[in-house]
Image (tube, rainbow, N blue to C red; front, side, top):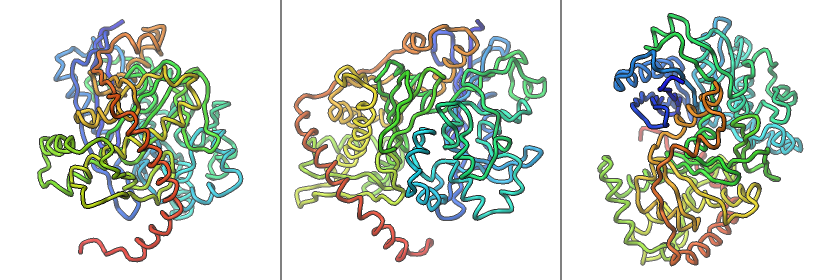
Length: 512
């Protein structure tokens, strides 16, 4: 086995590249950012060629920083953000931007399907909750709002598919990326006939399906030179960022839970079986054909902390966030009954309601800004705990034995980490290396090419963790608060549409 391998994670805000040694230790890394384009209300697009350039630049700079010779790098493996969609012409040129998961313009089409009697059957075949993030509904939106683009398109692909096409000249997508489209039948590993009918596309208009363990034996001379790599490097197609993050943090035993809080957030658990929710509230994606990851993404993670920080603080540097978090420690657990529902940007799991709104409930004259900051941090965790209860009810035979792993920018806040441990009443393990999707991609790639035999054992063999212990004094407080949170969440659900309608009717024009 060549000593070094590279993980490439094509994210929503940047592409990150990390070079690892054979022990899974990060040797060098680099990230290149790119903008999210909001060209109209609800839009969230990116330029595919800017992302391609970011991949090349990040690769070159990572190798330069490492000082490792290209011929000693034996493997590249990919991770990608889910749910992107690009229409391309016969030459493979994009005729749309990459429409990301955050784009909500297909909401009317998702709502129509969600309201139909066939919605739950569609979910149970595809494993994807009915939501405008899904390329299935983006296709319906393009067909109805831009029919000339829909007719001109030769294929509809994801951002990783586009990058790999530019390297290998073939359209291919892995099972995990296909699953995230809402067009893939997870029981038969094929494009789902009924979903294709809804989208009005054929398999020929989509990439060829590949297992997540598929890899190419090498690069062309042109691409190798362009990337700064040796021609003989193997390139694994990899999977999506969520399942790979579970692998990267070591949450690979049945029932183990991985929690990620960045701008948004997610909670995921691993199982040897496909796991779906009776009401369609959780996702199920493959890591391999024999290993499945189920869970739920939330829209509002670090973005909620950023919002409340900006309300009370003018400084943007990291120290200001630490100052706000530290001050919030003066507020007691439970914030004296102040509850925050964190749905500032709508919500995915567990509500799956793009019109959901955030709210503070329980405010009194006793409450200060420190109470409000802490309530925001608690609200994000309580929302994730709702999803955790759904997921572990489906997978774990004994919730007491579940292990909790956590990654993401929120781990820079000692208070936020402690709230997580206290709400879950679990020891929380935080891996030393934060780029878990890149490491997961490398582990999957090494498994694919035969460098490692047991994926689960390899995932657990290279980890150093920070451990955060729950405080038993807060157990009863958070148990009580969670019940209140659940009841408030349920009570307000019927009002979100009404509030959303009012906000649309009386919205001030931007620029005022």
